[in-house]
Image (cartoon, rainbow, N blue to C red; front, side, top):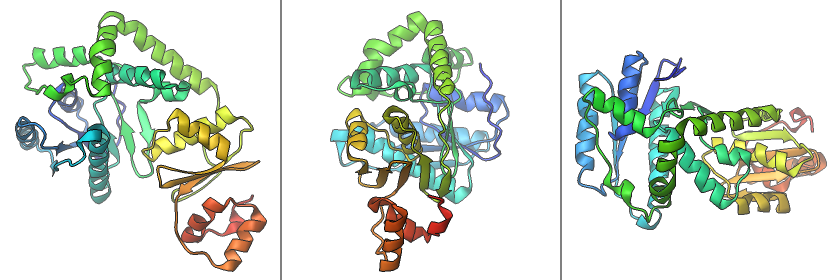
Length: 324
């Protein structure tokens, strides 16, 4: 179907037993790409037990490890976000404890268009509209999405042709969930009628992003501290910040982007501090570390933003190494 370009030896597949991840399971087998699987049972559908059993069955048959998390969600008012947070925290725990290098997810073309349409209705720039990328480099692993140019219908046809079992999640038809509303009313029908044009448009947009030639790499980095050069342009600075926060699992809203530009020093999602000075952009985790007077004074002389200082102290950063 496509060239996956997965070259790492230890890979973890985010599995659900649905069309997308089941097709990806067998495509990875065909391409002799090594992987194990992880699945989460949220206990909101009786069918989920059968899906977990199927995951274990496939893992046993094809000699794969199968990691299972059993959880009962308490806050159903924001099910999508809570489920996603639980899922990715679970994946990261497995990755860290088992030294996996790549997390493989089954996002496909319909998902990419859903994201685009949802961001479009909220107000977004070019980087935010594209959203899902083939690869996202995290701090300790890579997220790889090899199916982004393949439609859900193509994956279903592949499974049906090869008589491969899969499950349909009935909750995906609930249009009270925003993503399902866009899926049922817009993205699926657009892909069905204009698939090739949509695929080409995404390629052109991604080329446009690359042609911006943004300096997205920090000139100084230690642990989760990143320092960039101020681009002297609010739009470019926000693109840099947005890219960094995506790696940390945070997606900025338009209101948050506006607030960052307005305040210059701000805490996002109660855990990430951002500071924009005349020459630099600082991004670090929020820290409550108590600093000594000497360090505070050195930071003041160096003109390091107040909300960044505690994390520098926590990391025992030598301020003379910052070249500010």
